[in-house]
Image (cartoon, rainbow, N blue to C red; front, side):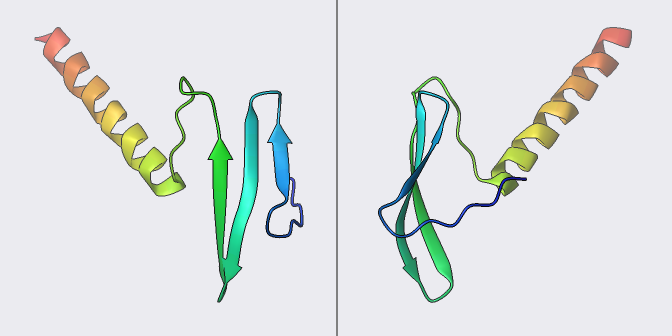
Length: 68
């Protein structure tokens, strides 16, 4: 994992198309903004895991239906 220090207003580039900017830091919370092309899906980690689990469950259900 790459760990970087940034101040408010400073950014990190990922490739040519993605920019992550620190927008504010207050009481232990860091707010970050993302500039990302529309075709790239951006999710918080907990939503990503939930989405992945739902897809796995759907695949298992459709696999069971195909076996019948």
